[in-house]
Length: 336
Ligand SMILES: [Fe+2]
Ligand SMILES: [Fe+2]
Ligand SMILES: [Zn+2]
Ligand SMILES: [Zn+2]
Ligand SMILES: [Zn+2]
Image (cartoon, rainbow, N blue to C red; front, side, top):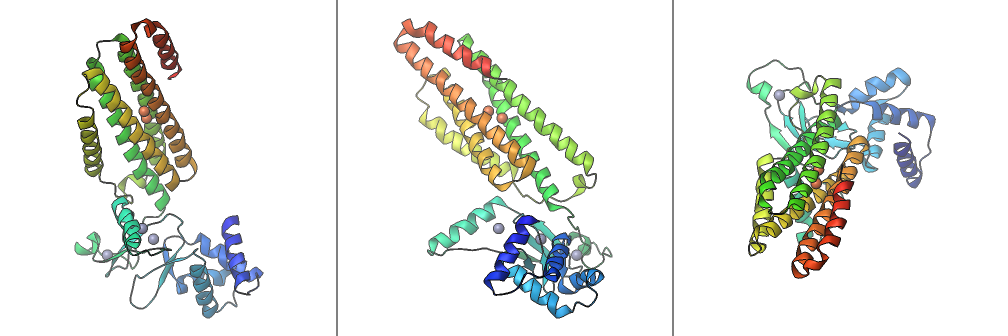
C-alpha cells in the first residue's frame, strides 16, 4: 500500500495535480477491489465512502491509475472497459457470454514476448494478450452470472500452488537421478557423496510438500482452481532431457564415474538457475524458499566439482589420494 501510494502521488505531482484526501480514498478503494471491474463497479463502492463523488471523477482517476501502471485494463465487453489491480503479470481468456475472465501466464509466451521487440530494436514497456471466446461453463449451457465464470479469486495463491507443483517435480527428478546412478561407482566415497546429495534433495522435497499441504489446507477452494501458471511438465522434461542429452554427448568419452559426476553437476546447475530465475518472479515465502534452494543447489554444484577435481588429481597422482579424500569427506559431512 505504501509503495502504491508513493507511486501514485509522485505521478500526480508530475502531472501538476494535488494529492488530496479524496484521491487517497479512491486509491485505497481501488486497491481493495477484487478481480476485474468497471468504472461503474468501482463508483458503486466508492459512493459508500464519498457519497457526493461523480462517475466522471472515477473515470478520470482510473485513467491516471492506468497511466502510472497501477491499474491494468482488460477488454471484457464491447461497451465498457474493465480494470484490475494485480501486481502479478498475467494474461486473459475472456468469455463473450458470461464476461468472465480466466487469468494465466505461460513461460513460453513470455519468452516470445521478450524476443519479438529485440528483432525490431524496439524498447517494450508492457504487453497484453487476450484470447476471446466461450468458456467451458457457457459451452455446457450453464447459467452463469455476468462475470461469474471461474473467477480466480486470489490469483497469487493459485500461482503459488502451480509453482510449488513444479518445484516438487524438479526435486523428484533430482532424487530419481541420484538413486538410479548410485551403482555407477566403483569407489565408496562417490557413492556416499550421492547418498548425501539425495538426502538433501529429499529434505527439499519434504519442505516443498509440507508447504503445498499447508497452502491447500488453508485454502480449500484452491485445488479445484484451473491452472494459472501453465508450465508444461512434459515440455520441461523434454528441455531437460534435450540439454542433458547434448551434455552427455560432450562427456561421452569419459568413463562412467567421471561422466556420472559431470551429469550430476550439470543437473545441479540447471536446478540452481531455475530456482534463481523463479526467485525473481515470486515474493514473500516463495522468494525466500527459492533463494534458499538456489543457494543449496549451488553448494551441491561445488561439492560435485570438488569430487570431479579429486577424481582427476588422484588419478594423476595417487600419492595425493588421502588428502583429497579427507577434503571431500569434510564436504560430505556439511551436507544435511
Ligand atoms: Fe534441491
Ligand atoms: Fe541439488
Ligand atoms: Zn462464459
Ligand atoms: Zn486479470
Ligand atoms: Zn506477458
